[in-house]
Length: 196
Image 1 (cartoon, helix red, strand yellow):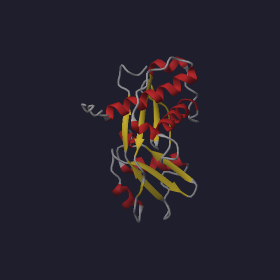
Image 2 (cartoon, rainbow, N blue to C red):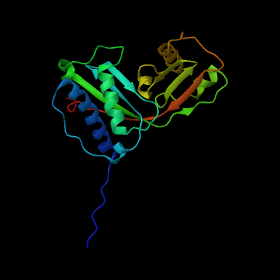
Image 3 (cartoon, helix red, strand yellow):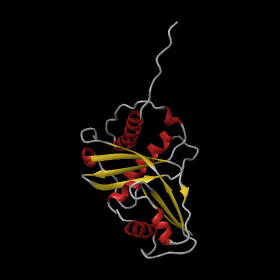
């Protein structure tokens, strides 16, 4: 009796599985045709993701979760895609007319780690531009930027100032009890030609 060849699952397979589910979650709400969804074993495990939408090169929605809960990665991606398209308070809900030019990207997050520092200067020096997603927390104020945001805000001072503004605080705010966390992502994005 011959042994079956092992099935190798690649990062590209995972990316296609995540992107098809994200797009299908939006298509279902818009009553548009869905694309085939390939299986990937990671979809059944807990996971944390963000889904970011762009329309003709501009941000169109972004929602996600920083830490894995009890739900599966598949459920997380579908829910975040739906929320990014229809519940992001910064934007009107996505319409069927935008579908053709909508680009989807999925960020799969590693577990956040607390950043140790004694001053804002030390915190800024510890950040790794282009690599770190950053969580800012002070009392009930909280915000995060995915690592992709470094493309628009490449220096640490501007990045941190925008992160504080996103949390609802002044750009020059600082307090001794500010908490910062960082995480990395595996980014999967649609390429031109496979968007819609």
